[in-house]
Length: 234
Image (cartoon, rainbow, N blue to C red; front, side, top):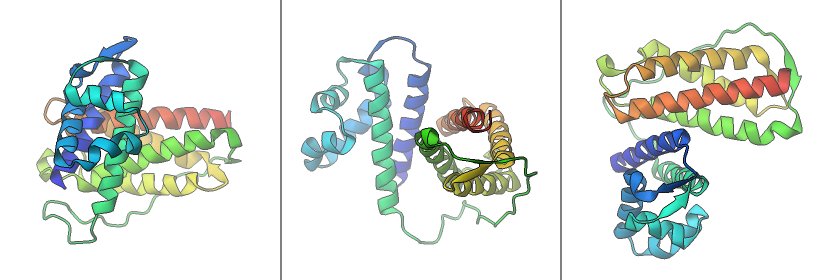
């Protein structure tokens, strides 16, 4: 399981690099995390040779390029590949997740109440459903990362109270986003809280790759929330 978590963090780092990439085409060897993960997966089981392209929904040729650390692909192909690989690894994480006692360093999550000023309720337009689905995926990933962080307390970029508050806000936002109407005040609160987490994570960049990935993911959440608020409440 630790290796799987490490793979997910490495793919997050690769996704962050691809998000900053400006060239139309990229060399797969410039993203060694993606290549090494594919290589490890293919060598761990012969079944992956036939099934991995189908599981990721990409061509066998594309998988082969990353497996061989060789070749050029379009930036869009690389981004799609990384995103599909991440989704596949997350599905593996959920499949192997067991309701056992948490590791010693993971503090129990205490229920925290969320208070925010109600500003305005609006019906969710049909054309933002896909946007909400992507935002929900990002927020869910952030909650998962916070919960499984096993850094020592002094190495965490958020205090225990801040972690509990962030989880409470995001889980409330996730629940509201599934409803036919949404509340602006909650979305503003979620954006504000995520922005604070992104800033704090940025101060840890260079210490751990996971912190950089978390900072990038929080930043993505802020961007998607800002766009969603504008789309619904403008």
